Image (cartoon, rainbow over all chains, first blue to last red; front, side, top):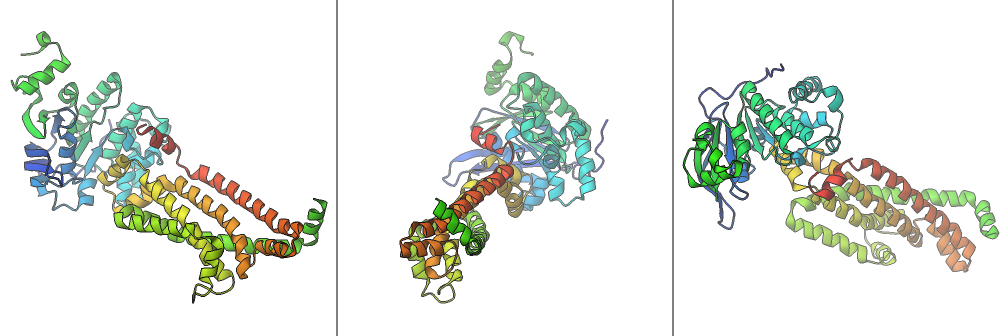
Length: 263
Length: 222
């Protein structure tokens, strides 16, 4: 079993990995995309954000690595407000996984995975070792895959590379935006299980955005439901379906017939 | 035909000399246009206002008839006068447009998701430019260099009118003498030079275009 020793661990035990305090984001015209978000992601915790398209999931994620800055309230990462972080430093300690388009088409797998360490100025030897270890970790033997270009991989393989790339500089926090959205259901289920094991083993905190409730239940310790820019429900994944909120009931219908529902 | 060939053979030393001059005019001016044009094209992608000014100015230069541009430059101090320097300035101005425009279009054509991925991974603006944008746009930029070079080979024949030498010397001589053979002795090597430059740069362009990138930009999400 591969281990990742470089981690300084989540910032001092107890400090939340991410903290939203009454955070909101509005467009310059004044239209609010998200508002009044209060949410805490503990160290090592995976929080899945569900909601329909346009509910503000991606915006919420981008508030964390300062691709967007909150226009209301505060978003803190490791105890520090994102606007006090140097954006480059903040992003390098925050792994970012997006749909497969996010791999750079002109770089081979090894160069894609080693990108953040290279930006951070690691020496070549250390990057090489790191890339090998990560590719093994995500189930892509380096001898077969390191030199391939993204367009020579299957969708599932590309997503594995995307996860490896996000883990490369050993960030304590991962942000994932529909990472498995473009995959077939079997590959998707497989990657969900692997992702779950990986975050537990590596003790990573993560915010995982998906529109698929089944996926949220599979990967999340807790689940948050966004609707029209507001966080309507946050609950442990075991208790989420029983929260009784009408939007949760509605979502639950999408994954199983009513009589088979638990509770 | 036989007359043309024997003329060329008899004057091969001089034609070789003029060809070398011609290549030098094109190489120096295209080199200068690349050095100026790529940064200008990049700047145009960064600032809205500059975008319009830069692309607009380059377009305007392109509409000035080449003979007139050579004429305009002659009286200018430093840049002007009779000779190769003026010709190089004029050729550089003409070569700028395709290079600026393709640099701008090449970078603008990159999927915004890739740019955001780079930024989200903690790239600085400069790293984003040198590691993502320029490599992905390199094929398109080189296509602009190719157009600039081929056009310059043609326009450089007019440089002979202001004493800059090159294959145009034969063309103007032939026109003055009303002698087709002499015109062709300048025009045919110039045309061959343009074809050769086009072929070579086309080869480099195919090599530089990142594999898979054309597919992904065409399909939107591959």
